[in-house]
Length: 186
Image (cartoon, rainbow, N blue to C red; front, side, top):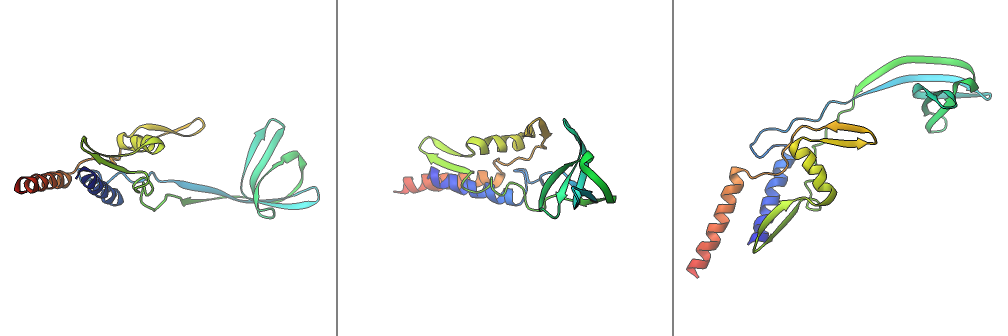
């Protein structure tokens, strides 16, 4: 019965995560709004070739000042030394800002059975995460700080992924009482 009950509790947790709600019924804090800013374009002549870069920016490397951007002709991110540029043909510094916030529900992978484990035996039952998924879930469950890239940290708001709702408590009590009543009547 513990294994079956663990699977039912996991299903309950998954439905709640899909609805983006905490065990107490409140909505999770939405994703932080992300704004993507793009520089329009720059065209220049380098080695007798015309180059066009989108979303470009200036930088300084150890070998000199550079311009980096998306090279439309080569289809990739390219960096050019400014001293190698013969002539500038067009410089559009107009910036475009657009909302880049994801609209898909949070934790779509974490709520799958692959990561959200349900185990039950004579000693009890558990619904939770293992390994790297457990670390990710812990950061969000308690609203901790986490490293997202080398030297870059971000604070996450607390979003309770796992918890027992009053409906879950009733489910557990009903299943156990039915099991006990079934054993007594046998």
